[in-house]
Image (cartoon, rainbow, N blue to C red; front, side):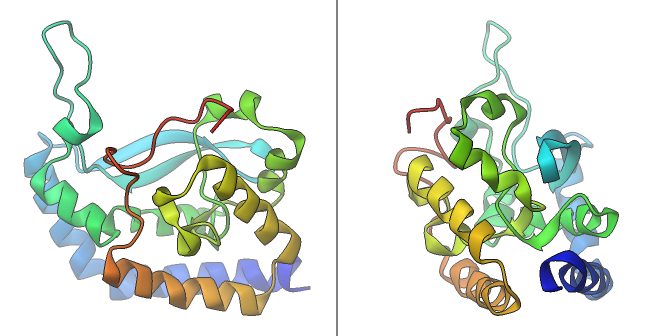
Length: 201
């Protein structure tokens, strides 16, 4: 009952209220990133969702598009703007995903949606992370976020799929605020965020 009906109703209600309450912050961050990123405050990218259906995730754009002399994008750490670093540190870059939740692309709680090119690299067990809607935050995020290995992250994602419940979602929801406040697990050592998944991590 919870997984099939109540979770989606709670997602929609909380996302709508969240957007209304946080709209002043949303507007301020949008304006700041508009000037920092040459008029591009938002970042859109294809991600696999429920049952691997592709959708466009919406995030605040925290990195600029600067390139080297050969026309290649600079590293993540070199493109991360000062305001982008601040927005990412307190996880405000995830705020526009409330729109994805309203649309039904995502849930508030669930495995984080990753890149489509990773789909062919998953084991059958890891692929089960797509049996539920992806989330803005999730079990892996409150148990290490980007500071843990891909292998461990997928283990936590599958554990969530097997143990989804109202109590688990409440624990993730409130623990997320604690993690954001302490700025824990934002990046792996030597990385601006997380290293690329190659199927062996």
